[in-house]
Image (cartoon, rainbow, N blue to C red; front, top):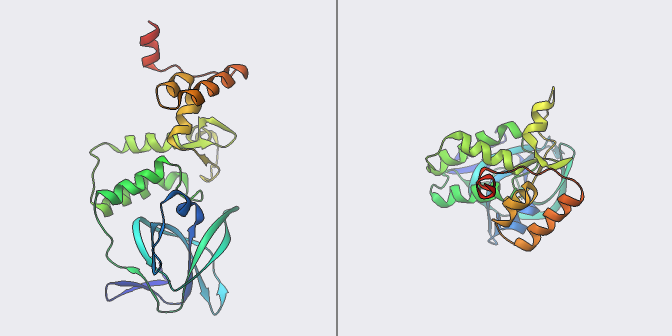
Length: 237
C-alpha cells in the first residue's frame, strides 16, 4: 500500500494515517489491548490524511495476528460500503512505526483466523469472492497446512455466509442467482447458529438441545421445510 513503507524491519507511514480496529474484534477476543500496543487480526481498515484531508478508507489485508503500536487513539464510527462500523481508531503521525515488518508464523496464527471464520466475525465489508484468497494468504504466512483441499475451506465459508433475507439459505445461492452480484450483501452466522437453522435433527446432535428443539418447533409452526441428512435417513430406516 502506497501510504506505508518498510524501514529497518519496521512498517512506517509516509503521511498521517488512522487504522480502524472493529469494536467487534475486542468483544470477541480477536483483538487484545496491551496498553502500548494492540494485538489483533490484521484484517483492518486504514485511511490516509493528505494535508489534513481524509482519503478513501481502504482495507489493510494482513490476515494474521499482529501487534500494532499505539500512540494516540479514539473511538469512531466509519462507513464502509454503506455499513457503519464502530471502531477504535489508532492515530499515526507521519513517519511513525506501525507494525514490525516480519509477520509471525505458527499454528496459533492459523487457528486464530479459523476461529474468526467459524464465529462469523470477519469484517462484513470483505468481498465474498475474495474470502478464500484471504484465507489462503493466512495459511501461507503462518506456514500451516491443514492438508485438505480448497473445497473444504470453500464449504465452510459457504455455510457461514448466509442470505440476509433468509438465513436458512446460503449466501452463495443468492450470489449465484444474481446477474451482477456485488459480493457484499450477505450476513454471517457462527457455527452454532448455522446448525440451529439447518434442521432440528442437526441441532439436537450438536449442543444445547433445549434451544434446538425450540427452533424445530418454530420451524414446524411456520411450515419451514428442513433438509434431511444421510445420517437421519439411516436412523429412520
